[in-house]
Image 1 (cartoon, rainbow, N blue to C red):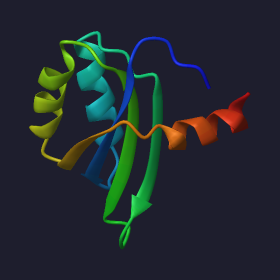
Image 2: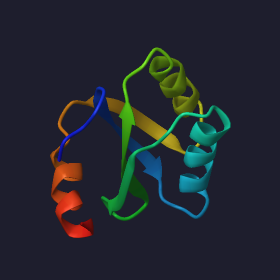
Image 3: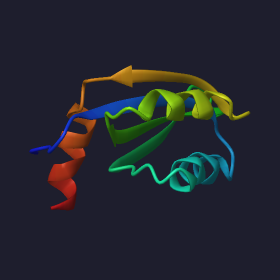
Amino acid sequence: MVFEHHPIALELIVRNHPGVMSHICGLFARRAFNVDGILCMPIKDKDESRIWLLVQKDERLSQMVNQVEKLEDVREVRFSDDLRVFEIMQDYVQ
């Protein structure tokens, strides 16, 4: 997979219930911040999910993360330069 620009993954731990993904994606959409990839899987006893968001590094990213962290259902946000999960999934969608 070849990326233009400077991609980074945001790894979120969130409460697992209907509407969480919509709130997160809506936040990005309202700020015209594109999400290039999304993967979500339940973890632990399925009360939580891990969401990986593939985004581009730019000057707005830290502000976006601050806004995401304020969402009630978001428990943790981490940055990752490890894009393997998206590279693996790319093989399945081509």
